[in-house]
Image (cartoon, rainbow, N blue to C red):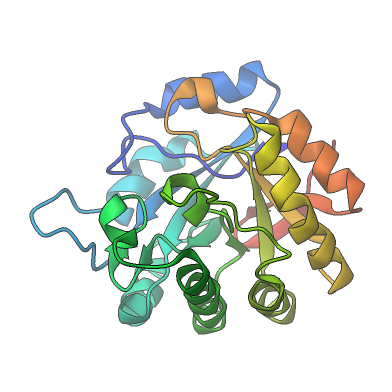
Length: 259
């Protein structure tokens, strides 16, 4: 079974999706599902809703639903100041899957325009990949890296794409860290509604394969039922183009998806 290995329900601060509706949406598409609720320590906007959840309450609520078609995971926000807290959080319940992300840079949320004020794209993106590489090594227990192109979602630059040709050295550093730590890279379909998103990412996955990468997860990053499994046909085409095997995780063990 193919799994959508990245989704968020009501346990994530930015989602109101009920678990049952998410599961129905996945089943309608013949997919398995992994819940990956947000864990982001040191959220940089004091007074705003925290991007943390109670893992024990999460496990108690969803473990009865956990079965062949559902695994329970976490999306871990990587940041130097959160390293010890992240490790402690990951140990609190037996997560099936830990996918990790870079959501902040210089303790500023890349979702908001303020993070980009007064900065040039070139130096900011180089720092983004440099931090990503360092945090992969600093989080040796993670299973996958989420949306390597996250910064391109909201960056206000004229051309927000990560453009492998412009940042080859920095992106290669990230990909080598993944291969050396046996961490899988995600094909995140959030921006696959437009051909540009796929075109810009194709060289990254090709290079990952050249450097020794063999496995990918596919995730929609769904926060609403209608987004579950979105653009998976395009993600599969990308994986097949570079001979990458699609996997998911159960009890922190990799499983090859039957396609």
